[in-house]
Image (cartoon, rainbow, N blue to C red; front, side, top):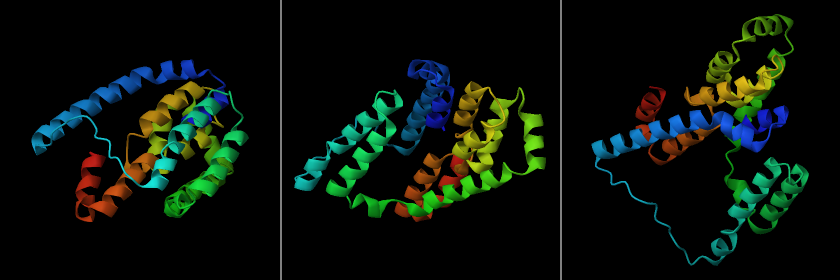
Amino acid sequence: QNLYLYGKTQMSAGTFILLMLPYSLVSLLLLMICVVIVAKRSGIEVRGAEVLLTEDEKLEQKKYLLPAYLLLCLLTVAHMIPYPVTLGTVALTVLLLDRGTLIKVDYSLLLTFVGFFIFIGNMGRMPAFCDFLQKIIGGREVMTAVIASQVISNVPAALLLSGFTENITALIIGTNLGGLGTLIASMASLISYKQVARQIPGEKKKYFGWFTI
């Protein structure tokens, strides 16, 4: 949602960072407090991350790919490299050096979001729904984005609501805050839940309950 709305406003990267900085700092502080509390209650020692080294030659060759991909993406976001160049470079590199990654992609999760996009596309063509949205969004962009994100996730919410308001900065704030709600409010949250369900299936109900709270 950030990349889409950032591109739509044509604002600079610095302006975007400053817009979200207060919310990011508060989120970081709350996250750190939660980590310390949970660590103390469960007896987990909080320390610096340990880097695991491997002798796997293929992994050794590929360890430079992620930083390179990240750099290309950042340069594309900063409008220094056209996105087709980045897309082509990453796709070609993956096919040549890391095609096994394509098998590990969670395509069911991607299809879930395709379903969301089809849904909001259809809803956006319904005159009654469009009239309703036009009436409620004016001056309430942040709250509308927060609420919509809980039901259809924040990326589809950004796409849908951006067609009904010129106040895109409010949508940026609203969809970011909205992504911190229900499990479905953010793709990142769904990914983390699927990791928990896969690795410790007996804890997934407990995780879902605490996450929602």
